[in-house]
Figure 1 (cartoon, rainbow, N blue to C red):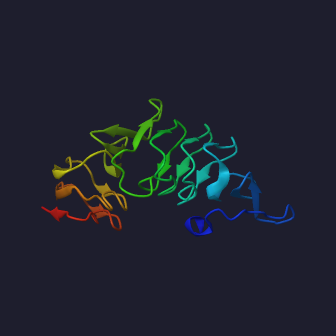
Figure 2 (tube, one colour; figure 1 turned 135 degrees about the vertical axis):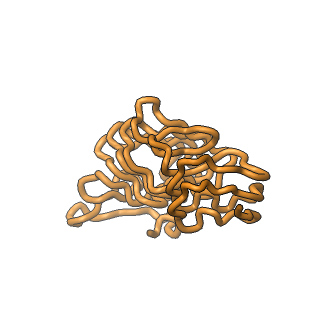
Length: 193
């Protein structure tokens, strides 16, 4: 993935290229169903084409001039770290059925995601985005400091859930936990219980 390395470099893909295309500074697969990456200079407000079904990891992470990103009803999958740190509010639409892990680029205390109430796959409770059956912890946001006990019923903790959190000192893991994703507990000061 080269999203963070291209910076403000302009992208141009020849129309005759068989696998990729660009539209307004964004690199897509040929049929524009997958967002692969965007460059920093694409603007303050980003709206997805209705054809987009998946946003790949780090796709918009380097778009620091962007303040809103609006997903269409067609987006079904979100990769990790898709958003830049400048995004404060973000709505996960009803159409999303899979989220790889945290969608912001670092642990975010000022990030305030919402989920469309009609989404049948994810919900937010106590600063956590979880799968609808509650067994997968996808991401945490807000100020988590001191000690935090994760609720029973969580079986899977996605990668990077607490990555870079500098205020959380202790995490009490539930007895139901079976899988911990890469760097999920890589906070700066976290001790486990």
